[in-house]
Length: 99
Image: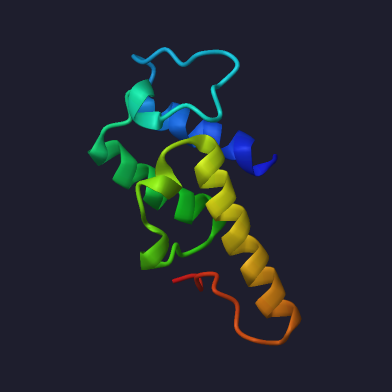
């Protein structure tokens, strides 16, 4: 499953069954316009970290990076590419270690 598909599933789950989500999902639409509150946004951020086994750097936790599926997908892709590049160079990965 590609990054955007996984993110759509996360957002849909966080919104819950009481919220109708447009089909096809509007990738560039502000998540707040779809009903994602600030509390749900925190849950989304934590869910993204768990789903992709990443840690989002504090500097990247910005409204711009979490305004739409497209913006979150860009952030996740950047973090995953950075992790893969560091891993290829023999440096430690930024992925979280299982606890």
